[in-house]
Amino acid sequence: MMKPAGGGEPAGELAKAIDSGFGSFSNFKTQFTEAATKVFGSGWAWLILKEGKLGIQGMPNQDSPISQGATPLLGLDVWEHAYYLKYQNKRADYIAAWWNVVNWDFAADAFHAVTHRPA
View (cartoon, rainbow, N blue to C red):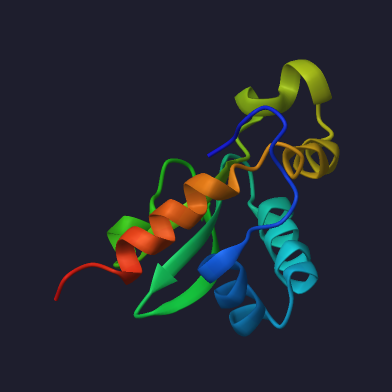
């Protein structure tokens, strides 16, 4: 879900779905960052697809959107082990830096696979 020289914004169908679902990429980024920031203790922030709609879900520990009937498209690990060596207790700095390595191709492929699944 990450890659060197990643980041930027998604393109294609996923970009259109984010704009449609959140109003803009900027709104999505703000909401996703907020969800990641608000996970208490260890956990994840997820971009999900459920019942044909995109959503954002913060989840504790190792919980997965799959257990709630959603498909994860993109995840941000906010367990301390993911960032402590470089960012210590500065989760917000880690989240801000994460946006520079997001692999939008991965998320777009996952979105396409789910939305173009044969009936």
